[in-house]
Image (cartoon, rainbow over all chains, first blue to last red; front, side, top):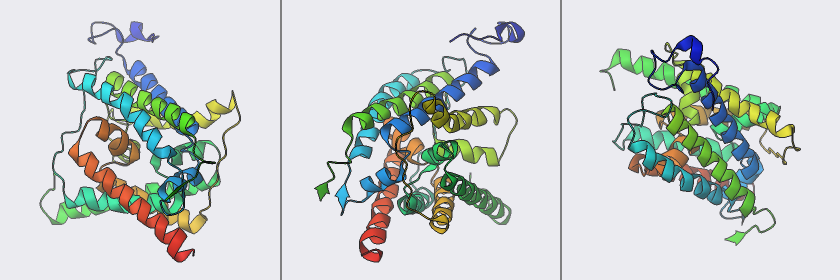
Length: 167
Length: 144
């Protein structure tokens, strides 16, 4: 990958000639694009197919398991490499999650998420792909999802003012 | 359990999964970040300096994917059974739940399991469990 703006951001300011604000934005755009293309190819942008996987008692479509398997196969290699690095290939800090504890927030939140996922067959990635595909259902879902996330922010702020900081 | 052989698409599923894994690999190795969609979107709601543009870029890539796909081929079938009310409730639960649970199918399911994170394994088992249970209730108890 080339960095068209190396001249303006100068090699003196950054550790690697690859690292610049523009190249990190381009790689984020590329990662999002490849992610979305993967979802479409895998059939995971089709909520009916996701529900076909979640319907164990009906005619079960195991495709989603293979999607996860393929993704994790590459992911295992990538994260094994990532763990050994202190900065990314673009010279950015490695931000691997530090949280360790398994608590009620993690489990309760995930249980709620699963219920919503099972209702419509849509999770956050496919929701954004559906939006881009021009499906009105994608727009409704994304707006509701943002509302849910804002509700979380509001509850968090309220909790922080009335109790000791959680983190 | 009966397998739905007519809808089972092992090769595209595996190939699509590899692309998703490639995206996660690119993002951690180039940007040093986890490709967790709910966290990336959720972070936009508590904007901090220097923390907005990369999130928007990733989201733009996801939204652009179907447009990019259409340049070369017709989009595969998209079938959505849920009506407006169900979509709204589902979206709300997904938004709230993924933020409390610190992740979704991508952050916990793909990246977390790839990192062999016990937290992500618990989260994935939890959302899979209620995903299966919800479809069972909707299709086989209420819909029966």
